[in-house]
Length: 354
Length: 276
Image (cartoon, rainbow over all chains, first blue to last red; front, side, top):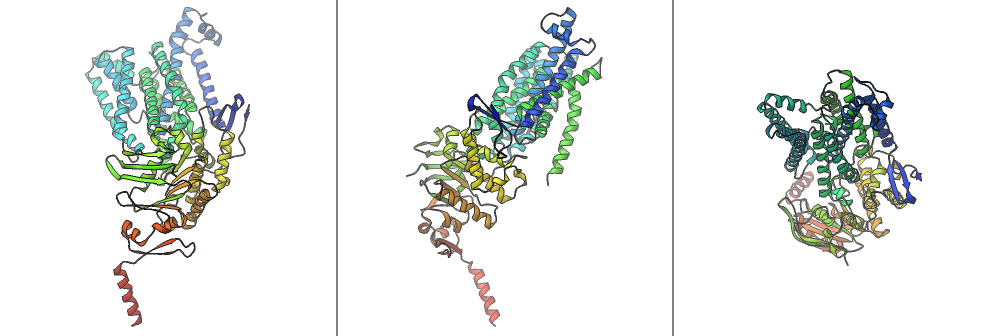
């Protein structure tokens, strides 16, 4: 059913199924990293479902999930904890995959959606919806999506042209992001007090006070976009060789870039719509996954699992360590991720001769 | 007969035209070498022939149909390109990089077959990099790295192979290595090769068909090097006065630049003074 490749020409293990009609190369380290991350998600899920102000046994949680719980456990499990957990998993995975794709496309660690202004743009869209249009949940989501896409198109259009496209995109994105940050602040100052407080809370990036509508919306986006991006991952790896080498290998460069870019922006915007801008996860998760797997290609599935694990653990930390008034999870990821970014840059600059 | 030719193509980037109405045919089973001064559009022409650059006018024809009408992977199964600027992802092994040449032969759910394994092994043996398979590309010398990229293009197993300045940045021994390998690919393995080279003497030695592009991207001459490479052509295309003498090793034309008049007089003075 499966067999290793001959000694040492290519890395990874060859998995053959259905009499050789399906054969996929899998890196053992990717499998291990993915498995560990999945285990962390699972443990985090159990802890977050059973602990807190209202401790439950695993059996009680199970009964409630199959519809046999009391009204109290139903409220705790189905209304409070489960949507929050699912949102953490979904947002973590969406941001990580978005970051992995965009970092690869721009051939730059800093090319992640939170650094190059895409998530800030999504926030701007959401704020316009909340403050200017007085929109509810659905309107906010649509606003975030539109804001993210418009920002991405703007950045990409400005960065288009020959030369070191990746670095140009990063620098232009940082500039646009800074400008949009100012717009966001301005929008808040124009709002009524209560709206401004709501908007500011939303801007911190939080998984609390969200519910099933956000979970379902994000779930739909993930189900639509993740398979597309996973399917195009090999083309993404070839694009890292450069546009011409990739084209010579039979990759339709323009179309591939467009599809991957739109997919990544869609994921980032959908996660902002669901939970607000959660900083640095999109930057850090793919990098952690890539260095743990030691892969020379973007590893989307391990990135997704690492992202989910990071956000589940972060959310547990802010809710359990800072009970009864939990911190927004965005503050935790911002703090940890910011330090991670500094460490990353220090290592990057030490490693390179320039 | 020709499987690959450019029909009156106009080539350029973002409004800047590099070559206008260029017509070039690659003879089947030839080792065609394209030469010409800097910025005359050699690499651009090669890119257009490989479909990684779309001509602004005219068509490139592959096997009787416009190359633009093929699916990308179909083109990549018929012709390969070794571009000048390719970056290896950090941390990739030699074997994995060469294996990427198999992409046009693979499908989403069929990512690795015995044919893939065999093609990668053969390409690495031909280019003499089989021992390097588990090494990281970052760790290699320039000469080794160039052979690895060549192996990747070979693993693609295309009947036509385009090479953009395959000898740049290599010392003379490695240049000869690469060119001898190309000659073997052409002679023993029957591949049609197209290479852009800067060194006219190497071009004359290895090419069976020479295409000289002049400034402004016009074909100044084409044909067998012995007929094409003349003093007039070099003067015409490069603006360089030269003598063309037989290569003492192979008898092919060898270009020896004349010294500018001024330095000739200077050294003549020197001779006189030494005598005096």
